[in-house]
Image (cartoon, rainbow, N blue to C red; front, side, top):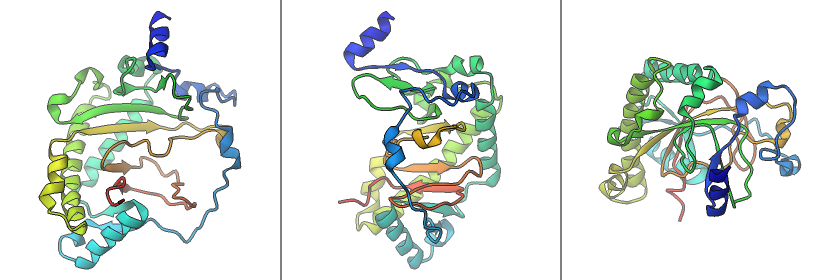
Length: 267
């Protein structure tokens, strides 16, 4: 309690209850910290004709038209689905499998990797005092993946047994993809590719795994708050076939690999 009071005074954060456990209680009640009454008035019209831009990375290497499509997707949408990216399907499927295996572990075992107060790395969510914000209806497992020298192995589970090796391989593959895309984005912006790539050269990579349990009163909860990815580039991998990603207007689409350029093309 003393630590909580100190965090409150300093505007710090403390861990909060597990959403997966709350959802399994079947009470249907959403805690005040997660309840978003304002969502009831936000009607989203779904346009079935809208499709997220798809960029073929293989064509980007040889086709100026595809590079033009990349520029338009970044400028008008801010994200796109990436195909033929060179990351082996086996690597992707193994990553999806270990993520699902981890979230299926008993709560006590997952809590061994729980976030510490005032930290973002580890399992769970944290409530930040003084901001008055609502929490997301979901659990988070966040790990610093690159550079390898900055990994805190205290948070890297040994169960599933393949998680460490799988995440290492996956993060290195994503680094290659990101580096290539940054160079092409720089070209579209009319910049020297090296100027932009140098900005990311010494940057870090963080992997955030999200678990969104079913919610009886889903209209009053949000799985993830908009603009939660405070990074330059975000690569999003969808583990299951649940649909529904929204722009300013609505559309539904099942995704595989989605790339966010996070306002790099905004003035």
